[in-house]
Image (cartoon, rainbow, N blue to C red; front, side, top):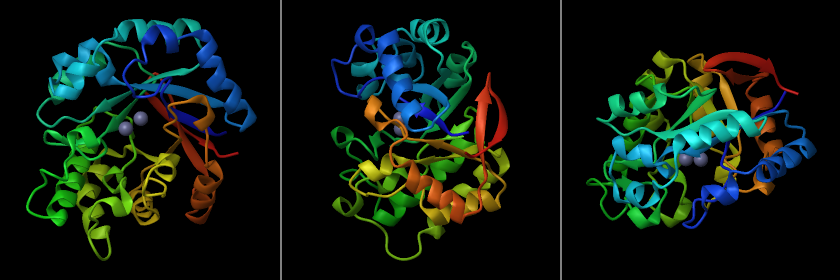
Length: 276
Ligand SMILES: [Zn+2]
Ligand SMILES: [Zn+2]
């Protein structure tokens, strides 16, 4: 069985309103592409910050301008009008874990995808809230803080899947990258990942970004596997055509690493299913 759990039913751009995208016809477009690509297990994971209720958690300017839809209408739509698993992509916001826990616990998810997009007030993946202009003393220090935060996200226990684990590399050569063996940074997240036994996402989205690589790097995934964590496979598609995109590359890596099973979720219970 193949999965694609980290799907968005709409692009991140402004003007992508719920009424247009949270429709039976749109969900069927995603299901149709998944069918063509042999992906049986499909779920959506809308960004939490697109929902008004997220402002109880954090009031960052990006969230204030994005938080317009009703999260319970989204839950009802997915449960009652689609055959998709019900997920959500929730940010790890340091210091706001209790508020995020309250938001998440009030709904009946199949799984929660946890993401580190922000380090402090600035984003590693959004040039409107550019961290590279505000980074700590050095690129090394920023990467260290990013991976420390990722470890906290795993350890906090709010999430079932750790999304795009080395997102900080998204810009590739367009931003500074530390020299040498990057495992010294990955190490900073590994205690939290190992303790939590969280499922670690292998995402093909990085292949569509300037970096042009899978998230995470093979050496990162190797460390997670050595720590005993299972893999969750996703595309992070924001349009139907990206469902399962580049899965051949992801499956090749999993084969090389000897991974034969993927994490599957239902009502926040995890089991492993054989690939293929
Ligand atoms: Zn994300
Ligand atoms: Zn996403």
